[in-house]
Image (tube, rainbow, N blue to C red):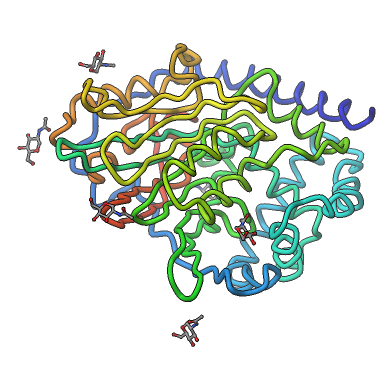
Length: 399
Ligand SMILES: *[C@@H]1O[C@H](CO)[C@@H](O)[C@H](O)[C@H]1NC(C)=O
Ligand SMILES: *[C@@H]1O[C@H](CO)[C@@H](O)[C@H](O)[C@H]1NC(C)=O
Ligand SMILES: *[C@@H]1O[C@H](CO)[C@@H](O)[C@H](O)[C@H]1NC(C)=O
Ligand SMILES: *[C@@H]1O[C@H](CO)[C@@H](O)[C@H](O)[C@H]1NC(C)=O
Ligand SMILES: *[C@@H]1O[C@H](CO)[C@@H](O)[C@H](O)[C@H]1NC(C)=O
Ligand SMILES: *[C@@H]1O[C@H](CO)[C@@H](O)[C@H](O)[C@H]1NC(C)=O
């Protein structure tokens, strides 16, 4: 059982990092601010810039689909993979972990479902990065995604869904300019993807070049979907270890989201798949539909669904907020992004909920923080899909 030992080392290292982070947090917290207003359209120091669009042609063989985006983004992708390798080698100086990744992960690939295996091979060949490292880069997102997602509907029953993607906690703090190394590395490889068949959009997604799953996406006229990490003792590490040891019946969460976006044809079908599929890591799925009342936060354990929290506009529940905690429990006291978001939504009022007002909420610290890579705004009935790269200049909390 050598693999689990290595992972328990990683857990210890993470615990040490967490303790350091808590000390820092006591000095830094609270870095909150009044609800922001009129931040949309994005500009100023919290706006890093636009996210470029690429088309992913699903009519091409999977091996060829990512050619264009990965060719353009290869330098950025090589940079982040190298930085992650450096961090792993700092934790495990013998270099054995990276050797295991390069030599053994590819032989496990035979077990990844169609079309992901072929797509990953294509990404590896075009970027010149070893396949095992591309697989690790894809696994990575299952474990470190901390985010805020909001679904709200206005008085007319028009639905809006927006999210901040916060990523890279514990992955290298840069003291020179108070930023997270991996968070910063992700900004230049963030892409908007238009997945098409027969030259027609099947769904849109915001992703990182080289990643073939989905974390944020919208099927125009039908549904919007985002993933938030859920920390739990029976967590993603266990699922990952089981998977490495050969248990293959559970689905990678990023792959599940991609399959649902690609192949589900209604809100109900998407909801059903998200509730029933067994997954490798616990998660929150935030799903919005095309009409009033169609919005829910699905709290998942790996093998079961623990809770489905739904919009109930008739009873006054016109928005849902999910960060990284079960909605029926208090968040970790050093990481309460939920309450600030709810206060700002209450101030906004249902009359004024819109993509612009949701962008205001997602621009308010600490909902916006040093981990925030991008903000996505989705309007399913109106077919609007926009993503923006973010910055959180000092004073700003680290997460
Ligand atoms: C901080 O410095 C790093 C390395 O020079 C750079 O990549 C990153 O963009 C900087 N971040 C900010 C927020 O200025
Ligand atoms: C998609 O559009 C391109 C150029 O507009 C055209 O060459 C191609 O044949 C079209 N493909 C399909 C499947 O309709
Ligand atoms: C989604 O809602 C809009 C606005 O109500 C409507 O025009 C459109 O037909 C709906 N789309 C689908 C696929 O039901
Ligand atoms: C969607 O369904 C098609 C047809 O069954 C299948 O070939 C494809 O691999 C599926 N896509 C994903 C991402 O699972
Ligand atoms: C938001 O408003 C609701 C309904 O008025 C209220 O129950 C809730 O306590 C408010 N939440 C916060 C954090 O202000
Ligand atoms: C809602 O929007 C209207 C029109 O833009 C504005 O006059 C009003 O003050 C807003 N209400 C709140 C509570 O922000």
